[in-house]
Length: 265
Image (cartoon, rainbow, N blue to C red; front, side, top):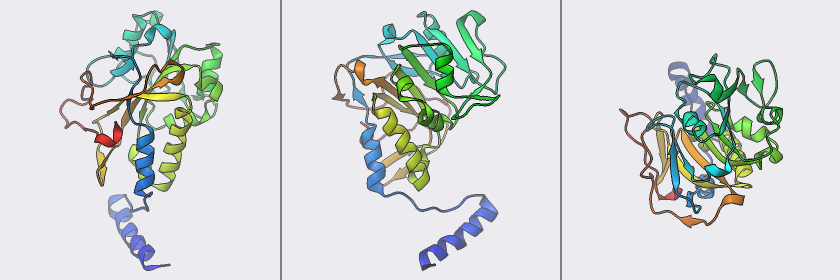
């Protein structure tokens, strides 16, 4: 064991015993920067609309809702303003969450299953494939997913056939700082590579509920909301001048906001 490994082992023993944390080897900075460069935000030819409330539970969506008939929204939580706004446009809402008994919405506005989304099937869990296939939805789907870290396995297990049925995808990526670790980078990078085969990035917004990390000049938020648009709908791909968008709002009002550096746009 070389001296560096010995020092890390000593520190980890102390940190784990007293603070329940540890040191780890990080991915090369150039690899992290390449990943961020791959998910830069672009003007895709549409104005952005805010669906849902100001603050948590609201998201920016390209103005292509006339090309959406169905929303799959796993991760119900307590806020349903996004789904309410979509249902006003006669978009059918499907919701899933094992942790709640039902959404706080009029029953006529949604179809709910009491299951979590994952990469396997059991009494408490369902895959995106099975969920979508059960309703025989052919296309024109919006997927809005906030499932506390399970988004990586959900995307990595969805078939490319079903992925291509989605026109707009809004995913809140959790534990995004794990991109600094070797395993975290592998999982996050592979998830994004799969998405980027068929989607462009329309918007990114850090959720200020959690911390952010700075690696050289790069800001890495722990929670990151990304809006993707199916490449078949992209009209143009032009650089944007700044983030946040004027329609963005802090998720947690009484906490400092997180601002992305120019590496993200």
